[in-house]
Image 1: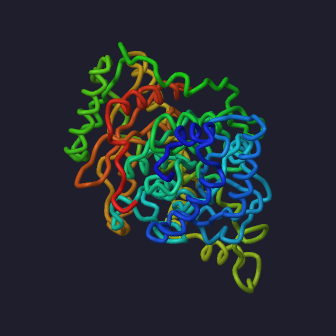
Image 2: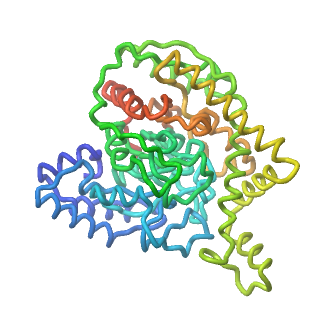
Image 3: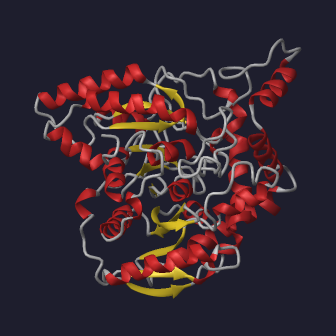
Length: 483
């Protein structure tokens, strides 16, 4: 059962080949057996899962149907879940039990999903390796000595190891797409505003976006269907109709215009990954796509702009964690200032402190215009580059990451080296565009992903292209040894 995709689970439940309760018990047992190797979960919710599974079976017995009714999933541990620890991978929130459900959690629960637990993540979603979590690093099931990517590394590792068919993630600068690439999954970052951020603990509010992680584009379409939609509780949510993503999967790629930016193939890209990217281009050409070279001239400025904007927003968002209302509080504070300093100093990890300091500096008097304002201007130039490109092409294709997964600890002494792993993904967040990573091969036994970008609200187009590619390749079907 653990090898079934979401789509196969939906068919199996509809045909009464097994019940949601039976499937849930199998997966919970598998998590208990295998997750100690991976550390992909922070919390397991066995009682809730079995209750939801029984309820889903009862709903099916009463004639209800639905692709997600009875489907087991997990949530990245920054989606608030009522009465369950929502830690954000941080000591700061280790004791926090959310008093309400995030909109994504509530929508998926209403659709009948079964929540198996909350997955490990980089602390407050800050990281590209899932090594900054207070609960310890997550291991990549393809090689336990390597990182799974971050910050949604727990979700990625759990799905890749067949502990469950799909999970939610969030993407601020590539945190769905990058771990998807490094673990052989399909991961989708929707258009900014397509999925509600209400109840999703914020890192950088103008960049964060929730999305699905699964083994196939078909499964991502099913999960996104349950997540997407307007939410009046979220001021950044867009009131745009949600199409039937599954219905568009089988569209022809004949005449599809694919742009390949020349800036993607610089000295920083592993040449073996470049070869796999071009092999995926050739595969799509066989399906009728037309390929042309394009240019994104301001891409070189993306990383410096992102690492001003994101920490600046983080320093503002994380100011609420001060030991007063909720979360970690230091022992025996001498006064209010001591409470603030020690609660934050003891509750936040090194990477979070680093980004808060960078952000506070960028927003400080005398530096705001020089750094933050300039970064926002660069952001507009990057968006303009994409708008010009999409006048010529329908989607943009390139590598998801410049390198395959690196060894645990390899980049801990050089944060900038880890930041550079996001070079291909962060532009979509700066521009608010939808992006998808899909499996495209292996380098030294480690997975490689290809990234697709599309105009606003064209998630269906990305899923269509990825699905057609997956019908004609088998990279996404490969399973890590031992899982």
